Image 1 (cartoon, rainbow, N blue to C red):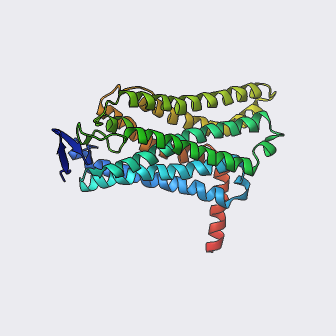
Image 2: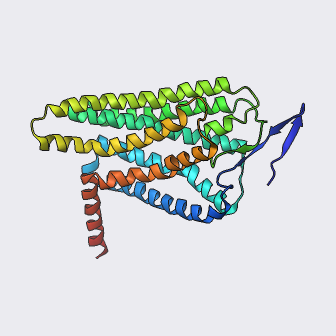
Image 3: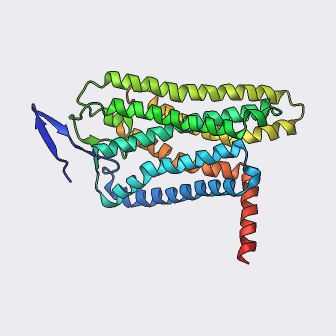
Length: 318
């Protein structure tokens, strides 16, 4: 469908966007649809499994696993923002999206993405307290504090998203209606603004630095204290057991912040739209799949709890 446009002072004002997505790969659309659909099902199943296991098993009702439960729930919502929409466009070949729909998608995508950064930082702090101050851990990370920190994480994430989307959609769009992406991300939408976008891009760049870089540095600081504490443990077995609780978190941190840095920690896009889309596929499709896989395979307590629940289910079915 060709979007309606209106002419005002010889400038065409965009009233609807076209998400270019993978329209330049018509022969691969069925393959991409099948691949992304299967990946999405596995991701959804993995995150729902983690949420169910943590909720059902009393031994996992600790701050560390409550934060993991929040991360899995957030990842589920994060994928819901982009992947079903992308699958629908691959299937129906309809690339149109309204400006209000684009704004809503960007707001939730950025809000959940920023919340992930803050939540991973909080999980790093939780590991720091558990390893460096084990005797004070139950007091410092008591339920009321954890609930307050969790609420602060998501309020902060969506506050940043609100500022960024307001900056981007504060002016009209007239340069083109083609968004060179498969969802409404910052850079491809900002390029279409009628107003001078350099100042907006700079403001968003500094906000991205605050979210991504400072969160990552705080995680590094937490792990610097953790490593220092581990070196004081006399036995190798003790060091290995203590650090094993951090391995899955570190893996997710490296992947999440690595992708975020490539896309958002640059004033202007340094790559082609095709390269940006490839990186975006990784952090919108592959990274959410990585979280449940890593936390299930590398975490002994989650695996044991899952086996316990499955055993109870078999007994009930008999």
